[in-house]
Length: 357
Ligand SMILES: NC(=O)c1ccc[n+]([C@@H]2O[C@H](COP(=O)([O-])OP(=O)(O)OC[C@H]3O[C@@H](n4cnc5c(N)ncnc54)[C@H](O)[C@@H]3O)[C@@H](O)[C@H]2O)c1
Ligand SMILES: [Zn+2]
Image (tube, rainbow, N blue to C red; front, top):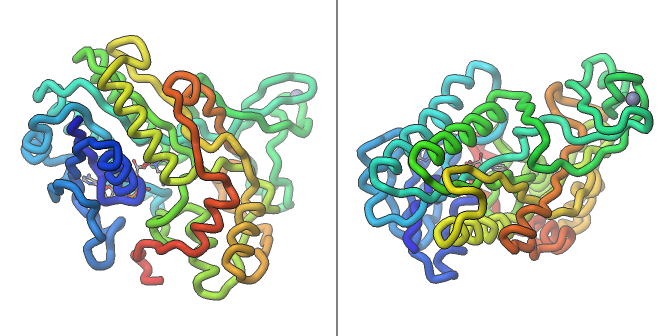
């Protein structure tokens, strides 16, 4: 099948292009090579047809959609940005861009789409109180964090909570502008599917890591920060007490999830026709941030991580996925184990960053 991969020159998109080609499909990359994502020399483009254009450019998108069986929509501004002044740029790129792409697809008769979703739509993870059962704690208070009280407490009785796995039915609770734009992308895509009788899947990625990940910029993830510190000969600085639980999923597994989802939407309908189906896309093996830092330091032969007690307001404490639906419905299986993946990442090349490290 011929697949338009928006953002196909990016970290995850490039791996998707490679995976599509390996399965005998025909990827077409549409990427604007945004300076925030590609500040250095032009990236090594994956071996595929390449259109340098913005998804907000309706004419360019219309042309790129010719003869396409499905769209794999990865293009987005990622990360938290610097401050709230970035909000219009995020909304414009991620949501206006998605609307232009969907309108062009509607017009071109393309009815199949896989979206790069994100676990950030859930906000704080899923918790159980020994007395009140399932509860949803609100944002943590600055005073508590400053006092080293990092664990969220039961909103009703203040008891310590047991973190659990988030399922796709958990209510959305985006906690920042980026998260809000990722949720809006899903809603726009669901509206498109309903309006045109399309089939859409949103893969809600957890923390993606692996070769080609950008170096530490305000937009990069925590694994990338640690990896960059080690490359400078410094200890990774672990915030809070290091006990934050995350699901680190390898980029090659995320690429396979995209190919699996694309094949499913093109040949059948994973959900009811005219709907979007969301799938958590994680390794299914939660680890703490401190464990991840240690695995990287050990593999790199670098200094032991430093647990600093620093914190960022707005960070969530634990967020780990239950990816059983993706395994059950589409038969996807992650294949890169945590230690092997981190060992590879400790030595893998990273992409240049905007801050020149
Ligand atoms: N990296 C993660 O851990 C993670 C987690 C959850 C979701 N995601 C999502 O996965 C997708 C890919 O992320 P990534 O980590 O590969 O980021 P990335 O910055 O490496 O890649 C994004 C690519 O999209 C391009 N792009 C951005 N806006 C564009 C536009 N308007 N028109 C055309 N091209 C545009 C950029 O030039 C870049 O090449 C994003 O949608 C992101 O929200 C990533
Ligand atoms: Zn309680």
